[in-house]
Length: 171
Image (tube, rainbow, N blue to C red; front, side, top):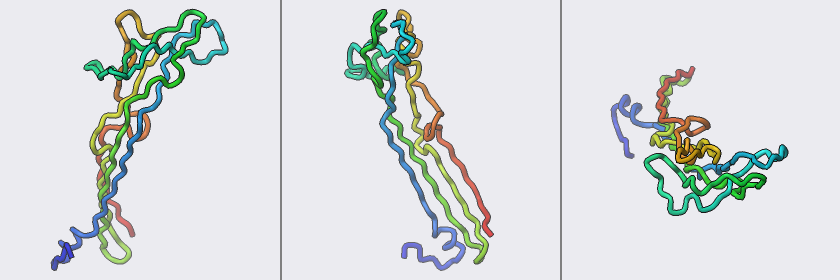
């Protein structure tokens, strides 16, 4: 026995702990790159940009937070449809580790006190998303966020680290 203790209080305090973990790893979400609709066709709901090169190939994330090369996307000519297609790039992957630790202290047959500690996004990995993915935002050399990464707390698993502790009395 690993915890062969003679003191009942010490034995009760150290035995019976439960540990739980959930690790979520997901590839990045597909992101369409849109453009202004210059076709004068009201039936077109989304106009995609022209894709002129591989936006991730040979591109390293810069200090400005760019995730892909925005120069690989251009506005289609007047009356033409973009050749970029749906979901031309993928956003960064997401990885989240949630942990829990709990123990029920039995007072008698009908009463108990449960201690619980939980950490959501325990590793505190920032979850990023791509925003402003329209070539219409390119104005000269001002990218206005096109291809940039931003922090988000939208959606499940995208929050900063959250720690919580609780007690529950059961009778």
